[in-house]
Image (cartoon, rainbow, N blue to C red; front, side, top):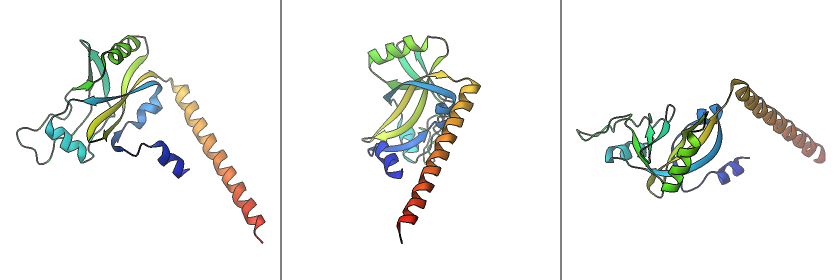
Length: 169
């Protein structure tokens, strides 16, 4: 199981922050990877692994995608050039992707949320997703399914251990 997880995780990604709550609160319909316009102190703060995506969302304004409410704390050794922690940041995406996201996010119940913030090839990237909000019963159903699969995996592993123990004299 641990090997499978490592295979899924991209080796060239240096993860800074993840928004696990987004996967719990939303049905993820489509994901995009995009760059961000950052200042120097923001990059230094991100390289220290300090960021929070919890309240973040993406808004498309004037044909440009903007990341709002992502908390990147001020750089400790920064001076007067330090950035504000919750400023809006421009996302770097292709025009066709922005137009597609804009049209789909106009539908009722759809929103664009950040899922992960990471470095790839020395560049800060953010993974955003077009998402539809889950109802409370959907959240409970998802948790129940996760728990059922976990219990079944445990039962299978225990049966295999018993089988191996019986085969050994």
